[in-house]
Image: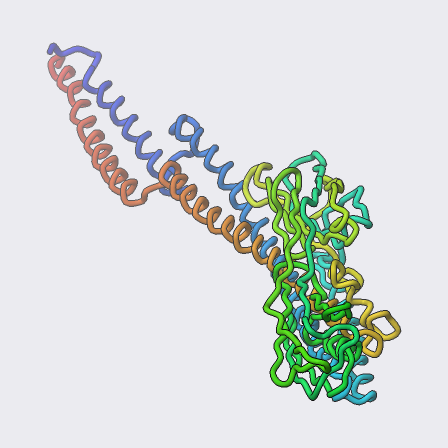
Length: 474
């Protein structure tokens, strides 16, 4: 190459040194900010991916916060319902203790009634005061709304959840087979019969077993009275008939049963003997809801389909008369929670009032509030009804608590787990694309420093060419 004024080597070296200096500056920026992408020019495609990941991560964090708050709300509700359940168990024990009229004094029954009154007041207080972030949880404000419910057909309706839709749902209830009591007869003891000698027999039903002692000469009517006196303990009532004593369970359904066994005696004046009754069971109603088979326990109906979950009790009118009853579940009310990052992940549950006036009902024949002093099921008036009501109330509370617990476990907490895993994955992907790898960046900085120093040294050598040209002129 000839010696010219234009020193190409110097220009090339200057270009290289400038590029190296720019690259070193970029590495220094990455090390100081911790980010590989500090401007769109650094990585245009990576910037797009980063923005998308940031949006997803923001939505995921918001959804996690929502679910954690939902979990806290449901935990508060569960704790209060657990206390209500404990109070109901105390009420049940007081009612059972008061059912044995011969073994309890009037003052003891009065004391038991006072405790029941206090327990009912406590239940209503818990319902009234349980709240989260200013919202009442158990007083019915979070119940899903319904319209067109016929009180002559359906009672104790509770809507546990509804589909995530803005359209009302029509519910058509069709009773194709009626629920029945368990029934049977004690043969041999006709209307005109009397017991010959002492007889001991047991009457067994869903609630338990009672021993009936029949005195010599007792009539059918007297035996019927003795059996009915123990129906609070057995769940079995008796009626007189021409040729037998009829037994019926006080409740409906396949869980109900009656049986009778003669332990000793059993002879009838004029010949013959009292017969045993083998276990006889009732039947559940057969119910179709919108053409689909519903789960039925006696008169109590439960239905779950396409996001709609509800329960109610058939009245005697609809049970015995059959036919169809229709009502509407509105797309309003309830507690709606955002479980995921989009609108499709919204879910609504209903938390109906657990006040004393709303617990019980159905085939129990009354509500918990009726166990209070001066009401129709107070201890001094009707312990049989009181026991049925409190046991139905216990079932209502257990059902409400299990629904909340199921939603909390299988939807909220699984959503938290899923979102936490998504957050980890998104954060890792974002880190790989956009964050500085300090080991790699430090090695690159050292490399650029060596190249820059080398370039500057070589630039000094290249500049010596001008001096060589001057020496020729001299």
